[in-house]
Image 1 (tube, rainbow over the protein chains, first blue to last red):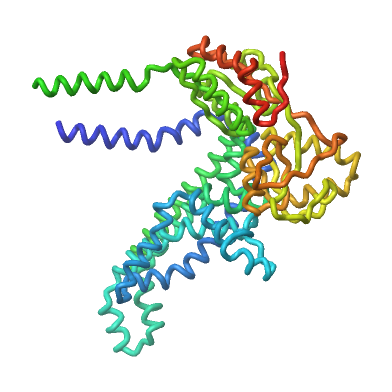
Image 2 (image 1 turned 90 degrees about the vertical axis):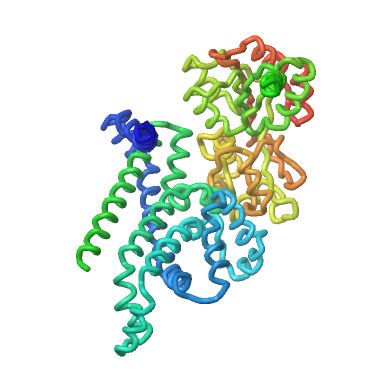
Length: 259
Length: 250
């Protein structure tokens, strides 16, 4: 009895996850899809989304990997505090993140005057899109990478050092290969989160086709003008997400096999 | 046992007492926030049995929600386009223009770089409404007229300075209030003490028509009709005039 109830609940959850996507696909004819994707907003929005999320993930990997290593193996009481700070964007609504970024980097923001005197303008620019994505996606990469690095036994590094490795090469030749599947997974999740980013981008970067209008923003704008366009865009984004997910599964499976 | 039944009775009484009023769902353009909140208070004083529930957003967002089946009893748009579209789709009774206003340029309160409309060409960052939003469509009409008055160069400079297209007039104004935009075009009724208004000459200005109608599937059409009547009557006129609108009497 309990078992069948649990099964039913699980099935219901699966239904809620899958059926909306099925409806999205089924409710659209190929010609409607083609028509929607022919909208002049599509190519710029998709290109901008791919470009900005790529830059965001590269920045996250470069800055997040050392941070994650420290969170996994560092010492001191500050570690917990920093781990908490890194997780903050998960619990803070993206709209709040957007307002906070404006309060910091906007013209009237804390750093507004300093930036202005340097001739740097961040809000309403493509850099603002990237910054918003980096902030909201950071916890997903850093968390995943920290977990991946925790799997690396500190003793292994010590052994590598006694065998003549420098700290850097011990990290590169011992720790990174062990953590790699987890790091790739974390980067993919962060990429997915950046791709879907909406609230912080809308407030901090604005909504201008070709400059700050990423796919999620174009979908909402499309919804306001022509529902079919929004549906076609959504399908394209779902397809991109599915390709990402499958690619990630395949890459991590291969990496685990090779070890 | 006794205690439980008392509790249940009290609970039920509580449910009954908390919602004796019948709701009327009013979807209104964000530019109508002030007068409609005022009208809500006046209307509920006159009709204590009715609970007016207001939803504010860009007219095109509200129209989309109504098209997708949102339970609006009254729909009030910042232009005739969206109201007519719903009427033609059979979702709204014939819409009625109940008020008008016009456009104005606003700049941050403490910013004196722009003192007349022609200075707009030198603004570095302008925020506008998207073309699907009434304020965006009106702004484009205004720029069309500006082309003949101030020339192509002016229009091109303004269009090149647009850094964001917002989805309702309140979001446009907010960007100026925050100082993030040098200037924006909004309704004259949107001017508050955090922004400074730069008048738009008559030759370039456009008339903004606010239109409302009763939903064809209004559940409590008598209350919806009463609200519509109040909006187009003295009660609505008072609220609209307080907020700076010109009242249109049918």
